[in-house]
Length: 575
Image (cartoon, rainbow, N blue to C red; front, side, top):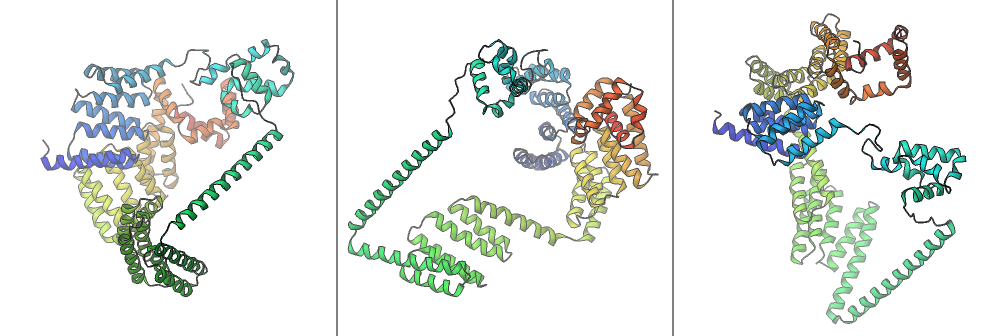
């Protein structure tokens, strides 16, 4: 049994994984759940990691975690829900339905299990052959037989002599989503009105539109004029009601405002000496307005006096609180302090005042500055942490733990090595090997790709990438990776063996497995591009109608490479 401390640590990792999962940071979620599992093999951790894997479309890994979850706690219904979802993604419908049913035996009222089972059964059944709108588009049902209805209508059939109209009708029947594009044609509005029984609003003429817009413009001007006159009358009445002292105070504020506007004009022209004098006059005229002080602080910062800027902002905040200034103004003063410190590369100080600003008045602008400051702080800390020698030490420690079978410990040390020297491709490749031992193929693949990005000639990384793709049954990708490694070193045994076993797997794969692999392969943009390439479409058509043409097409190296890729992906069957 795991110690209480390890279980508690595992729970902390799970909580962080849950946060990452909610934020859709699936890689980070998988990393935290993996750490939790290394500390305590709890069924919930496998369940959560299964969900994260499935979110990344690593259905095989999701299935393995779901099965591990069930083996640990077979009476927990949610484990069967995870298994059913993974099998559904793999298009193993019968096994998926079986998993959901087993879960429902444990918890008959579980809504998630019921919904999952319904979805599997519906997809397995598929649309009824020849059913109108098969494919789930309700518009398809409405437009089924549209041409027949037009031909039968005395009012609409007259338009059939126009090829453009016929083309619109035919297109609508095959692609109902084009309806909106054709609504500008009055004939189409008339057609849909009769066929669907919908009365459309008649389109106004250009003259009617201009007249309506002119009337709306006049009404708007008249309304604005009335509102302005009302506001002026109200302001005049309020002013007349003021005492002589209040009128004098208001006059001072207006005078101070003019000084401030003059200061702003100088500031924009970078005439800082004149701007400072104008703001000083504004402060002297109305010492209760904190904005004059924050404006003065901005000038002082431009003059290079950071401490002076911060002191003026502190004075502004003090005056603002004393005279019940709006929270937004207090927040702006704190944000200005944050900006000043950010400009001087003091990220800790900047974050301190940005956070204070958000407490006063939360704004998206300051939130963005916080994010930038945190990023810059992280980059600065990472740069300060660099130490290639300590990176080598961490790698050596990771190698020792790897040999001892301590995969989580090895990952921790390799991660430390990467932090110390992130441009060493071997560190990522080693960590990928450790992730593979934990069956975390998503993270392992990311590390292989990073290693190759740093060093495209790193043969070991190409071989390991191929091994992951082979395990995931992405044979077309595995073949590419192994071939790339062999281009760099034709005698590399890992790549030679990998290519041989991949070719064997492609030849001996069963029909059902090939169909599943082909379905997953169609999610790959490269495979989709090959299948939609007009030249390849013609090649495949020729090969299906005239098998003898295959030899001619295969003499073209580019075509041969693409066909080989389709065979490896399970798209083309060779048996």
